[in-house]
Length: 390
Image 1 (cartoon, rainbow, N blue to C red):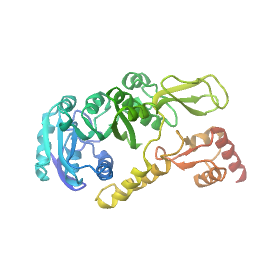
Image 2 (cartoon, rainbow, N blue to C red):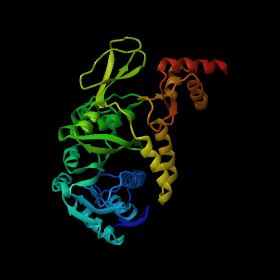
Image 3 (cartoon, rainbow, N blue to C red):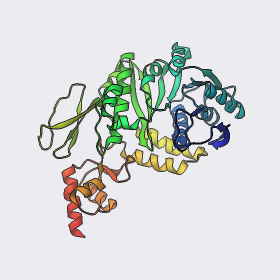
Image 4 (cartoon, rainbow, N blue to C red):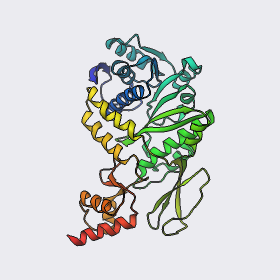
């Protein structure tokens, strides 16, 4: 019934693979999420080391086969206890088998329990968690409240969302209902997905006097991933809340801008003054990560044997470059199509923009896009001039 497989430093049993993992599987397992789990291991070790934590308590309340929590116990130093749960009795049975196969029975406690119910059992300070990793099939939204209540700040809250059609605006009404935010189906929708998820989490944490800030965030393959620092107190909570606002997208000239606060300060385009604009959000308008944390993760990669190490190294390199850049990005292929011209070499576009004093880097969100402080009109003029030079 189950197949033996190896990932990271562990060997485990998993269900036979399907072309597309579904919730109808006896025990849910997605092999395409190995990269997610690899990054989670490195991020967790970096967090524990950088924040000098000891006797670390971790919770993974949606464990599936148990690969993620077992890898945490086996590969990350400084962990005292990993509380593992799943509502599927077949999953719980398999987690225990995989736990015993890898000799981490002293670290893992496994429970047959709904995720929210499990998290609600750990609300006293001594029992709360330093790390909670929510990795559901679909949205993590329904677990925000119980997860934040079970954190012991300074803590590490990690969230995965795979409901991409909702977050990128294909299912607009579902996004408004689920995340209380208006999305936009546009070229930079995957960045908006990260920002909508982060903004929703911040708004959920604020009434509990918890401030969240992203140490690492990205959107690749079929999901969005956030790794957040959670801190308690009025100052940190207000600092997080003040980074929630709206994005304004102008349909007329393509200009994008941000407006702070939950009451939009303007509903017109900063550039062409058009009054017909798209209001996106509320969402996170701050930085998408912490440069020093990402650098430490890159350094720590050498200490792990990971199947996706090369790809992780490339991803972290891109994230470090773009983390302090302006919000949103431009797809050069789409701009070239609009102008009906060939796509100029990326290196030449980047060089010209930097020579002009603009910020410009490639973005991990799209292989065809750049993150730049230049406007769409500047890019159109540049692409047109480069075509004439050829």
